[in-house]
Length: 83
Image (cartoon, rainbow, N blue to C red):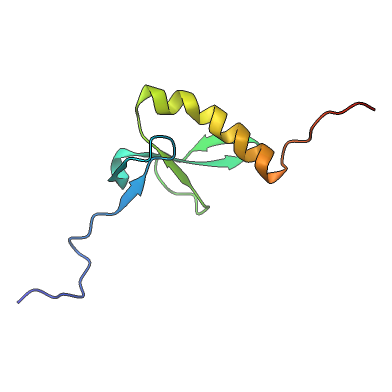
């Protein structure tokens, strides 16, 4: 009789940040933002809040645009105004 509380057969799914497609976690690239730079965590060793993006060229090209909007939204980018 199988154990219903076991998570041995569980496959974690994550959502691509750009195209919103849900796929297996192992097929996505995980990254985090450090000092306004994108840092990919290939081996998934760093313990920080990460985002995921798929390998499609369209998603990778739109990633910089998404990061720029996030930095602007959180106030990490200072606007240059007239002095």
